[in-house]
Length: 365
Ligand SMILES: NC(=O)c1ccc[n+]([C@@H]2O[C@H](COP(=O)([O-])OP(=O)(O)OC[C@H]3O[C@@H](n4cnc5c(N)ncnc54)[C@H](O)[C@@H]3O)[C@@H](O)[C@H]2O)c1
Ligand SMILES: [Zn+2]
Image (cartoon, rainbow, N blue to C red; front, side):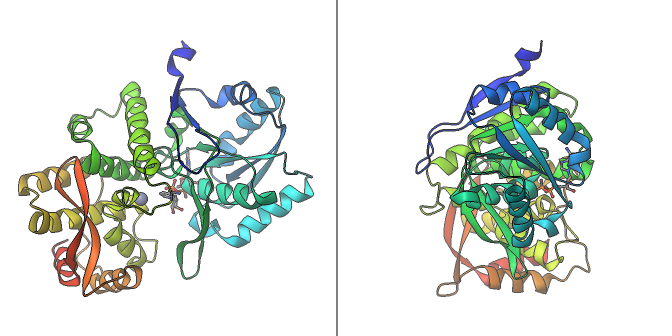
């Protein structure tokens, strides 16, 4: 039965926000998005923002269904890919919304992966000084990570996510069926963030992943819900990224971001770079945080089980990785803040790591 697939995840109070927001996780949700939102949203006009890959697959369904729920949607499609996550595209979207007569009583529906979620959320945050944003993530990464936590923004030539604003979504709607069209490589990269959540916060989920069978949809639903809970819990205690809990989500990301940059953002997907970054973080955790080598090996095996890279190609410019870490991170007295794990399920920010430690971990990759 349809309704049995349909569950509401109230992710709890987030400080500094208007209210709590709900995440719906289930099958065939796009087919009832209109009636579903009708119960919660008292505005009519909205812009569906999507990209050139996702819109042909799902936008008609969403648009028709929103219309059947009494909404008046327009569709704005921008080219797919990270290169569209710019101020320029945000401006294009705003102009289209203005031309269509959308006022501050309207809202935005972001239909796509993390790129669209960040961009549509940014537009919602600035349009008429802020209108509601409904996230409809269509990648696994966006469901378990980017749609939760309210970080929105765009990239500039100097780097990723340099311009942005916190703007929590009003609702997040995770329809599991949309994942069926997701290319395998994109699907797998979502598991990098899931494995990250397991390593930093959930040893039980780590064991569950070790015995994962891809075909089980109900497990996927449970897994997504669990990951939303983990991320939202870490975000809720530190929504604005100030006290440190949220920073634990950066596990694997210092070196991961540097690898993305060193590969000109084309060699590795984000999740793949994070996979490599986590392997390096585990190597450092063995020497600096007492992680048992068997646990490091178990993490590497799990990443490999999901088709994620755990070694850099031999000719990859490792020096560029170090350069990128230096640009990205502040070293104080030669030390860097770095998230390590002493055992699977636990993480903390260490202050005793040096550039040499990072150099050695990257050399071993
Ligand atoms: N806000 C946050 O907290 C946060 C966290 C992590 C990542 N991010 C951001 O998320 C972005 C990466 O997200 P992503 O990996 O989802 O990238 P993406 O949105 O670019 O999607 C990846 C590719 O898959 C395609 N696609 C999406 N859904 C599909 C579907 N159901 N079927 C077929 N193709 C589909 C897209 O068109 C794109 O080509 C980056 O911009 C990153 O900075 C943000
Ligand atoms: Zn990430």
